[in-house]
Length: 156
Image (cartoon, rainbow, N blue to C red; front, side, top):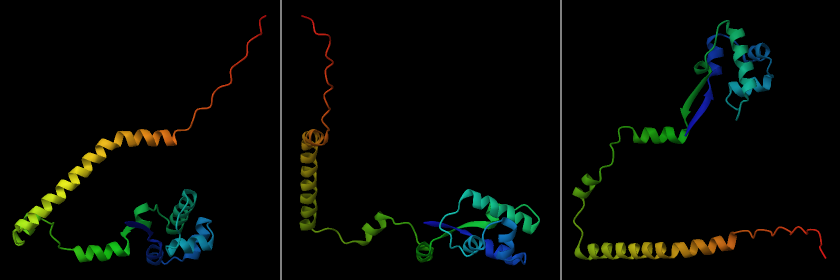
């Protein structure tokens, strides 16, 4: 999973500006700006983002690009996993098979018996499937209400 983060704190520090100055320039509340700078915000409305960008441009005196204030980083678990897997080679079953001892006749027979049982279960399921589907439809299908008949003029 990749998470999106604001890079406002280093940008403000680089330009010797404070979150308070950004709040004043953008018209956003101090709390909102501090939450954005400290990456505490869970969601940001487009209107807030517009105000933030306008405030940054006013504060820095130049246009600001989104990639200057937002970045995507791996989540902490993924970062650890990426470190663990760095340099890992793709898994090749053929290489593993070479290292394994050959199956005994008993193991081969057990595997074949298991595959037969699986195939029989699959066939049984396929055979029973249409009847089971019809029954489920009958159980869950809502009865259609009968429309009341319009009575015409009575003729005698």
